[in-house]
Amino acid sequence: MTTASTDPINIGLVGLGTVGAGTVNVLRRNQVEISRRAGREIRIRSAAVRDLKVPRDCVVDDLTLTSNPFDVTDDPEISLVVELVGGCHIAKEVVLRSLQQGKHVVTANKALIALHGNDIFQAAHERGLMVAFEAAVAGGISIIKVIREGLSGNRIDRIVGIINGTSNYILTLMLEEQYSFESALQEAQRKGFAETDPSFDVDGIDAGHKLAILAAIGFGIPLQFDRVHVEGISNVTLDDIQYAAELGYRIKHLGIAQRTPAGAELRTHACLTPVNALLANVSGEMNAILIEGDAVGPTLHYGAGAGAEPTASSVVADIVDVVRALTTDPGNRVPHLAFQPSALTELPLVPILEVDSANYLRLQVIDQPGVLADITRILGEMEISIEAIVQKGASQDGEAVPVIITTHRTLEQQIVDASMRIEALETVVAPITRIRIYPDGA
Ligand code: NDP
Ligand code: HSE
Image (cartoon, rainbow, N blue to C red; front, side, top):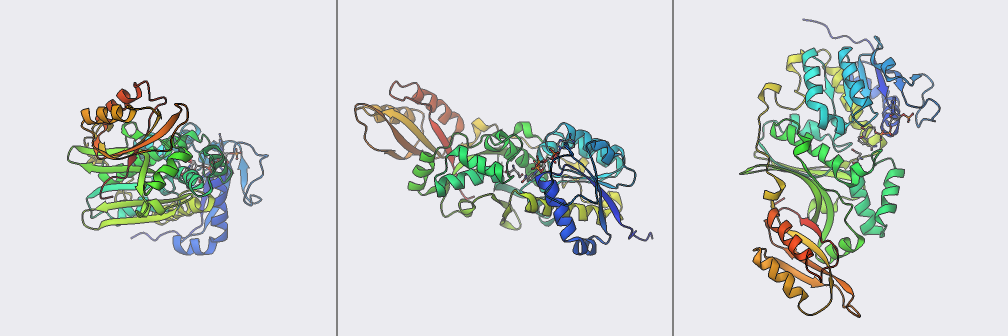
């Protein structure tokens, strides 16, 4: 039997921005408690940044700062590299180089894991090294650990969540304080929630990366971001938020991974969510994830989805996990993607046009006799059942007015085809805004 080392362990950080500085602050503030939990003192030895002159939101006097990330990855005194740069270029090099150098890795980088995780885990597996990525999904919520460990006795049937803090923050400011989309986004950027390129947030890409990870560990399938149907919130207007409220809904951006008889649906998009649903009441940068397992039933996990210290909470938890596991037989560690690498299976993924959902449609139509009849005729011919139809206000001099329609569940292909036919009417003067309505039973 070997005796576990209690020597201090040196770690290195690459990136000292929002999350990097938060990680340094949490590690310093809670140093004693963290060491008691990890069983060893954790020392930050060095950190790499892009620009050495930028002031930092953490104390760096006792760290070696460098602008060369490979000074960190190649330092023989460092056992664990924490990648907090973001993106897939330098971050991928840092992670692969760290593994080549025999170092464990902690990362908060969902894009990197979703797009290159299969290769990274393979490289780590071959060398008996750990790659931990709790902070990559839902910031401070320990959702990876919940699915990979806490729910490992279940067949996971459905994962539905608010998994992009920036989108939820924008929708909340638009609903509660009538912010415009642009000013709400600027506020999210100022608070450090948004990605370097905020289109990743508002176009649903960041949520898509996270959903690919959740689906992999929930369903035991390989990471496949390219098969996730991705939509964001850029088309949601203050009017849509108001009309949805009048109909008893809040607009939320959701990630949905669910098993159906045809396979698995993986999609991210805005969704009209009934005001009394738990997810409708998740505000600001908070995230919440509903997981349904066959044994446990529905479980809900809530917490801050972005921000310096909530994210650092997950980064530090991963660091502690790695330090604890350093004395464990590599073959008996929790597998990266929850299932043993040789046991991943292919599950058919349902194309988005075969998904069915109820819909909210906002049309801009010329207010003249016969317009609504034309629209309802097309919907009827396409076998789409209308739940409600409301014209908002009356026009003067034939101006366009909004018409709101909600439909019962219908196949995506039918609503796409019907929308094209309706948009071709001369009296319909703008592209239709379509937002799906929250899935039944979620
Ligand atoms: P920031 O942009 O705030 O920080 C990025 C850091 O990386 C900066 O310190 C920057 O240096 C450094 N950096 C960039 N390029 C290089 C390089 N070539 N060499 C060395 N250092 C470099 O990002 P965040 O902290 O917000 O995000 C980091 C990661 O965490 C991303 O993957 C993000 O998706 C993820 N994440 C972020 C959350 C958040 O709330 N912000 C939440 C969950 C995950 P410099 O400061 O000198 O420019
Ligand atoms: N930009 C991301 C978000 C950060 O807003 O959710 C957390 O992953």
